[in-house]
Image (cartoon, rainbow, N blue to C red; front, top):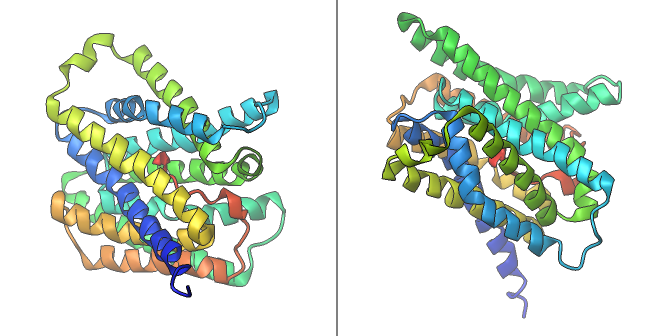
Length: 322
């Protein structure tokens, strides 16, 4: 009898860890897709196209027995879909065209610190001393990894593109941080699954509409079979499945513990990028990863619990999730 409650506990940690690793693999798949001659717009459109039926099912399932959406709900969902999934995904995938997957994950993982800064600005109060220390540690790690990658590109004149790629990914992290802050009330009213499904459907519509405006319709037919296979894996294994795993983990162990397990993401990206992409593993990158993880771990202990418990859905996506 005493052992029974432990099963959901360990299942929750396993789901949270697996979800974090699968979400982090998105950058690896994107890099592999770019080797087939497609760009970020192609990659995001294929990801959204293949994910769309599952997001539709998610929105339907999460909305069973729930009140009908109001006009205010519709406006909030549109805003969240625009910031948390459309902009975050587009900026992230475009940034990945210029920087390594490891640096991309470190920049994205700094989003909790961006949340702290935004909340402090909204409340017109200074950042507390311990919070400032945590922010300095996190951004010091990002800066260390960035400087190492930019310095390695100086010989080929690519430092400017590294800076541009890092700026795009930082914009993705900012967009996702805004999504987290705004989504608290919507999650409480609509539920995480329903909101995620509806907001991602908005992002799907925006991404596909952008693609149709900028590319000829027959361009879908020119993609190699490997592009479709990788995109299917990107949609299912790196987007839909980890979203479900993270939401299920939150039900079993709570959002705080689920967020802690997300710290395995940057480590997984670093190892996968070295293994599959043959990206260089350097001491500054390793130290930068340690600093980012340490700063992120320090934030809750420094009193940075400004995000509502219900708004910590780990997407990325966005986002996915970015």
